[in-house]
Length: 303
Image (cartoon, rainbow, N blue to C red; front, side):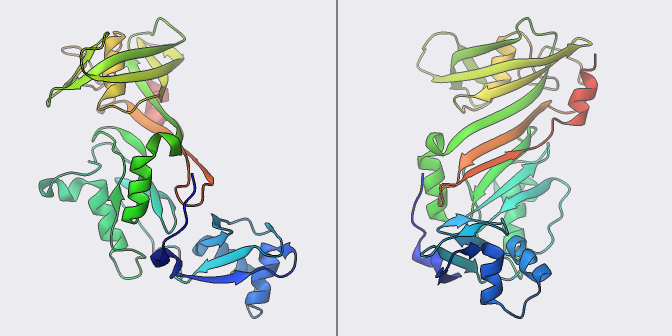
């Protein structure tokens, strides 16, 4: 979906209207005749540049008369960000996509503030040179699940993402290591989940809980384990963990839904959100992010 940017967001851009057909790099050169080609290329990665409201980094992007080019006035994409539990994968004026490591809360109470992704990002954007002063959660990953997450940088973007999540996010995929060797190469699990505070219960029939649907594909079986790729049709609390347990193959390291005395050779919950695809909530552009399967997952399930 696509929305107009707010006046507040527009105020941080300088806008120009294209008069003649040319490539984006050439057009930037006409705007900044003293800048070298190297500096102009760096501009495409160091600032947000919009062409007709679409974030554009392609230096030879073809411009046509009447197109609107807007350049973020903030100098520098962001200062260097380093944190052992969080990596920024993508950032623009409206959202941040990160890769969260296992053991880090997505958000939480003040007691958890030093161990939450949102607290780390709030500190980052609030430093001198940071573009914003706030970061807003739009979805969560369990503390012990690693992988890709998205945060909004203003309330309007947060509300757009939350209110239209299923329209905007068109592909979310996880990879897990399940105990035992999966019987099926592919399949679907459907149940009704109820949050019992300390755990989530699952029913094969509608018992008043929330319907949950997970699709799975077995990638590899070896050594008493299975490497499984999972696609969420719904996004309920602990959904993947419960559904794999329902299949009789709980996730390695799952102390809540796993077997008693279940071995944990990885010393972590073997669940990783490796793919996140969505339509940009402001520009409508397709955004696709993917991380490799964790190497420790693949090493455990070797043929």
